[in-house]
Image 1 (cartoon, rainbow, N blue to C red):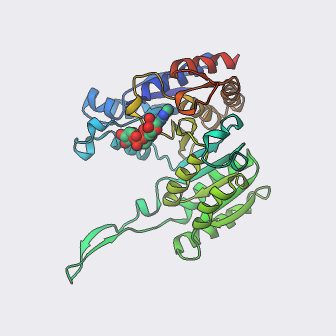
Image 2: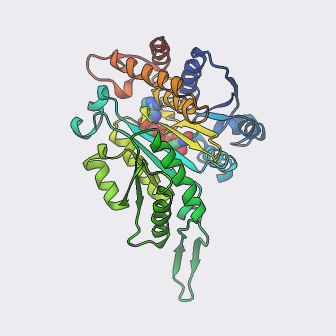
Image 3: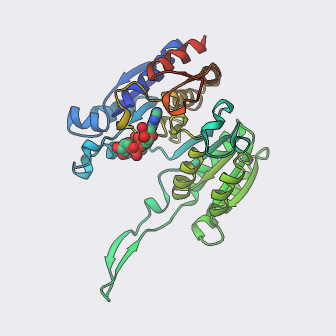
Length: 352
Ligand code: NAD
């Protein structure tokens, strides 16, 4: 099992080192090779996605990524900026399915801005289509009309096969969870999502055990705040998923806790925390590594089909929190406040 380890920038190297430590402690047959991406790629090879990094990622079964970006690169030409490296690697690897769990451990219920009884024990998976929709549809652009007024155009489009492909990911994942899929669309107004709904209904015939429901995106945004525990798996297109997954991540209070996965058609995946490179706290050993550690657990589950070791990591994280260990972002009174490295050590100890 080959893993490309791309720490990236900012807190990336610190948090990825903790995830690597946990994977090593499991004594699995993993070949992990490190390479630069983002600002680190630019520094090493003048390219946010150096050829050698892309080659390594393509030859590996999975990619474990930290985060990219630093304000010091903001003045570079657009194609040289760290974020370009991230967008390109996602495209080059055909990662069309983005999985963002929003999980709130009862121990952290106070970290959410919502009432503990609304969010405690939340376990929701948002599946967002990542390569289509209005972000990529043609025609697009800003042009000037005959009367001299400017006009901006983007095109929302999905083909049937693109919808079926992401739908299948959602139904398959629901089969491993509580067997409920909520498909989010705006079928009352947008034809693209009317097709989305039709295809989801057709697909559901292949999954008789899964309960399929539909929700308009405006209602979904509201329900996520009102009663988020009603959801098991939510599946939606690129733009709605972009917004809803960020909203869902905030239900849990800390961005430092949320892992993510992006998968291709063969379950090859790129695994990374949902947060960015946090340059404000980089190098201080105070970042929360748990989102990255939980991303490694997702990697074992979705790419390597190793549910037992994925659960082992997730249970070790739960145990560490139950023991009172907290990094600064989730610290509460009376907790055992630790740094990034010590949190990694605590999770390793909890694995035993
Ligand atoms: P950010 O997610 O990096 O940070 C937002 C806030 O959350 C900061 O206060 C930060 O200190 C805190 N934070 C983030 N992760 C944390 C962790 N693990 N532990 C403790 N606190 C944490 O977002 P930003 O500040 O808007 O962006 C900083 C840089 O990251 C920018 O260059 C941006 O482009 C980049 N970025 C990268 C990704 C990615 O690599 N996927 C995603 C978002 C932003």
